[in-house]
Length: 303
Image (cartoon, rainbow, N blue to C red; front, side, top):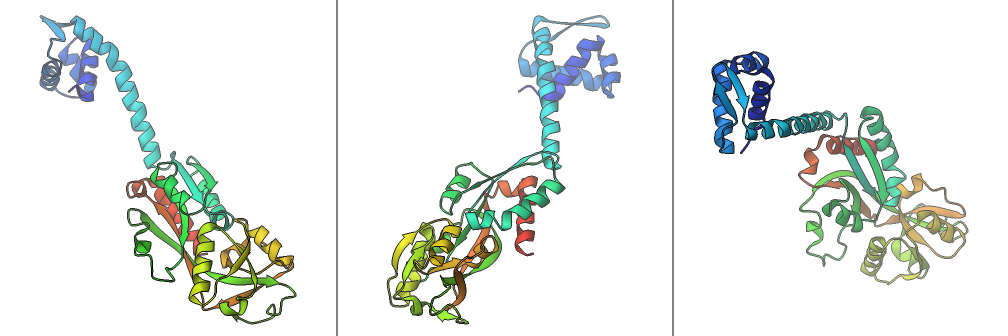
């Protein structure tokens, strides 16, 4: 196998014309140059130099190898500089995938801090609900996925705890679910309500994961919710509730980016929380830019 250090010696010999001059150029001893040239000729299996007295002359193979060495060594130098830039956060890339309420609340501040601290790092953001975002992470389409999960209300899913077992999980916060009712609703002024108080109401549900959890919570309380409308868009949920078309439960985090119009929020008992995390792959967690982005997300979540 040809080593880069041997190519550097060969190039120096070709440029200077002798082992001793090459040694001075490289800052080493003449025997060291001679030893490395012997090792290179053993690796290639052919003579590279013709020694005539004090002069050195390249063979045809030596001339060809020197010609390629310049490009190879230049490429290695460029690679070393790029890797050093990435390791030092002067360059790099972080592709982030987040669910909507996270991308409107947790993400902006973290991205702003990351860009200010490491302007050479390229950062991008796309939205996807958990499930899809985790698939994107495992498929190499992103470096970090913001996701959430609910507790297994029924205790019927043995795989619930293993959902992210192959990933690095960075906990960010615990987000409580709150009730949302029309402004003129009989429970609009209540300090808190039970989920069964809404058993006879029409419901507006969120994303598929949220809908599934809503049904589980309600059925555990003894009723099946009548879901009239479903949307992944939180402003749309508030709009539908405000228009008197039903009730909903929503993550408290969603309130930070939406101003309810015609709707009132009411704490619901028993309290239900979802766990919000940042996910990455074990190897990616050691990449400086990814590690720094995880720190910014954790800092923003703990604001």
